Length: 454
Image 1 (spheres, rainbow, N blue to C red):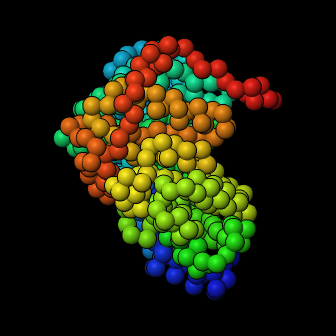
Image 2 (cartoon, one colour):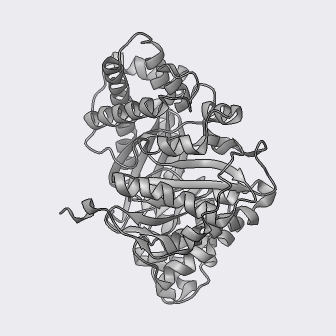
Image 3 (tube, rainbow, N blue to C red):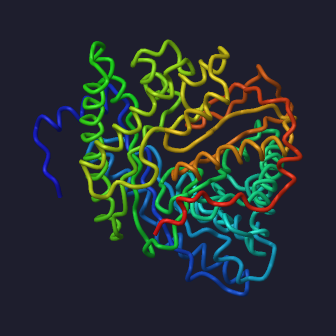
């Protein structure tokens, strides 16, 4: 294990106490491939038993590490094999039973979220995929800790527009089924292009088929640390500023790897990756938007925001890659509106629009994340937004995602409240122009020419 100098230890203590540095999540990935059965009752039991066996000590180990290293470990989570891949063997459409088994297991071991109620349909949809997708609204409405995701496109396969169209309706239904909670169900559903297999962050985490039977991945978050570093260099040019962010990212990643390897040793499972993502929270001083503003943007959403975010994202990745040979996941900067106080304020002031956020997603780590829109937004409009975001990911060979909440009964100017890390979101306007005829074409948007590279 790496040794740390006294100066590094003092720096880390300062970052924890004053700059909101934390281990955002220790996520245990668990393969469910050996749980497949043609009897759904057997599969339910095997899924529950394996998760409870593998993750029995996950929460306790996270708390133990927090005490030993003085480093807050905010969340302990689980990701599993995309359920559609495993459940298809049952030959049933009663997938909600599996969702309930996952929720029971997550509650039993004490994790706050379990991801992997997922389907991968970038090139087509099997009966099992379709059954899972149709069950998502029921599962997210009736479970507390289960998160879902659907991958509808990749750079090599193109975009499955039939799946995109269906997901527009599914997102609306998720929100409607949880109307008493401001549409919370939709906040636990992500639609991806180019989804990655080792992402420890929810709601999009799943355990990829190329992963080992069980693995530990760590998600580190340090917007406050980077903000202080940027604020301390008000006169620095951009080259110098990038170097400052890289050095800061390097230090944060080293801490993440230390925690990840400690968790691996204590749990007796392989260490996977550190995902160094600047994942904000609604807390003051823990905002990606504030970093961009510290670079000289009056408010996030103003001209220059995309360039500032590009510099930030790239510098974070470069610093992390120098600190660890096991950086993975989504690593970079997230811009979830409801989870970032600076984004919330800018959206409330009307200076941050969905169109500007879409432009910024071309250079950030994920995409249109935790955005509340009017509850009467049509499924076709939601699908068209998904298609736009997927196109950015497909063409740029990067992960993009959409997590929209069509807030039931809410209109522009209202807000939704989720609490905790999910925060609150002002309802943002969407275009009134119809995209229904576009979405209705169906089929698959072909992959770009770069997909022919070998």
